[in-house]
Length: 81
Image (cartoon, rainbow, N blue to C red; front, side):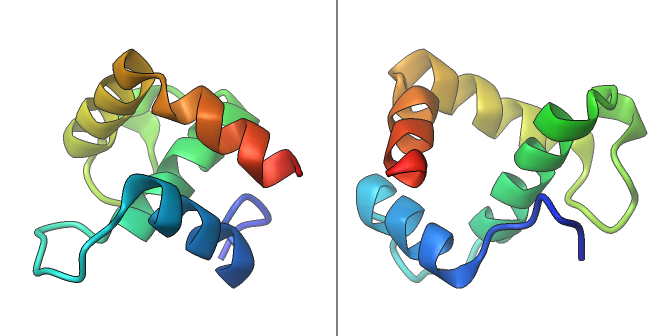
């Protein structure tokens, strides 16, 4: 667990905004977000993401998708409230 990992209340905000459905996924979306926040905070390179996160490729893909939709900025502003 890292200091960048989401708290339960933060995860609930993200789930609500993204309308996350409880379905089986290859990678847990909460862990994807934890990886993104780790990358943002540490400045780590994508390919240097620690092994216990999802592989860098799906983390990168989700990050690009959410950024292109404007979701990342919206979520950050909501988490700051």
